[in-house]
Amino acid sequence: MKHYFQKGKDASKPVLLLLHGTGGNEHSLLQIAEMIDPDASVLSVRGNVLEHGMPRFFKRLSEGVFDLDDLELRTKELNDFLNNASVEYGFDRQNIVAVGYSNGANIAGSLLFYFEEALKGAVLFHPMVPRRDLDIPSMDQLPVFIGAGVNDPLIKMAETEELKEILEKKGATVTLFWENYGHQLTEAEVMNAAKWYQENFRK
Ligand code: MLT
Image (tube, rainbow, N blue to C red; front, side, top):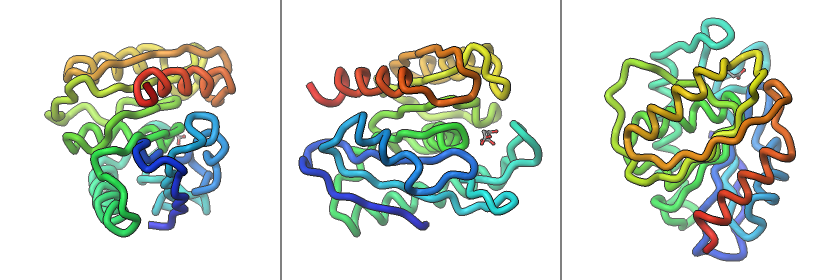
């Protein structure tokens, strides 16, 4: 997969896996990684699917309706990519924290739904429930931050609450932060994610 890797100052820190929204690329979230942990390594990946020229991480049939076969294929592809990247760049595969926005948050959620221990933690900005027909693995105390909008036109509050419940039922520890700016990612969300990261990974 097309990607950008930047080795951090501190190799004991998690690797921040950046996953952009529809139409973004491997540069879109670099500033956000800097705000969350300026010393961590960054692995920023570009989605392999193009929708009218816009990169995404998996196909969709319409807005909010996912192509579930492609979601499965692409989730496995990303997981394999992470396995290989950890060898190529010499980082600990068990020490990856995903930071995803929108479509990128959805593939990060899907990684958690398919693979036990795929991630050490996840920041999901404006995620959906990736799918509802899987027996998902346990996530014992996995820290997850969700940033969502009370007035997000793409994601009802109930879907955000549903995702939180699904993750918590499997043992994840979920922090939910509500914003008021639709589907937009705001500075307050990022600052709260940074605080959550500090509490969970920098102590
Ligand atoms: C998705 O397709 O993953 C969601 O609709 C979010 C988006 O990328 O617009």
